[in-house]
Length: 309
View (cartoon, rainbow, N blue to C red):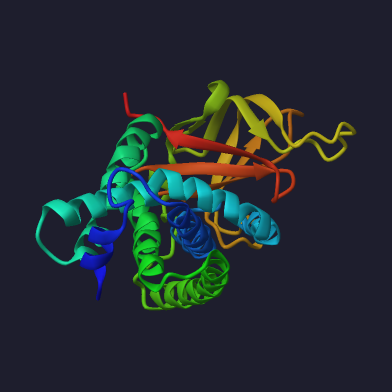
């Protein structure tokens, strides 16, 4: 395939790279991002709970696509310096010092920069280490191979960029079709909220800022600093009010036609209206949540089950 000759004869086969390498790395590094973003968005919206929020980030994705011609070259350049060019250098050094086809080193080299950035990111942000490193390595793979291909074909920068643009469209279509197929065949499991019995709902649920909801098996409830729906005659247009006191609760499988089971909470007095708390999370770690205000930009409150004392 010519990989060995390319690695051995180019003057930049050491700890450096040529301007054409940077152009090629940036071109495909940016070109693959729409497909990568589409896969991430489909995975997140399919496997994770959207908590009833609007279009699940579709408006943000649409805005990104609108400004893609301006953003992608910049993001591609960043990807080139962080992932692709270090991978190219590692692949060329490996090809000079170890036997074997050059393409093997171009395939394996992206693991190095992925580990370099993925391990600190996983530690600092709590991201899954394996998934983070795998995602970074995947983002560096095609551009690293692309740089080697561009060198072998001796394409001019203009030819590199228009080919990368066509490749971006092809990758996007393939990503959409692959994700749709994976969803239909069950390879990507769609999120479903857990089904909780009244006995499982009873207990203490806590949230941020001291919010607490105590649901007793007899149907009585106690709330502390709990957000509730504001009164219908409230002239201040608040998304929610914080209430404290006693009341009643009951399982509710209507949820205003959202097909989401939950809890209907009725607090005594004049603090707020009846509030539907929907069930989320998992069987092992259930949650109650309510989204106040605009579904596209409202305030989300979540309660987690407190550990039994």
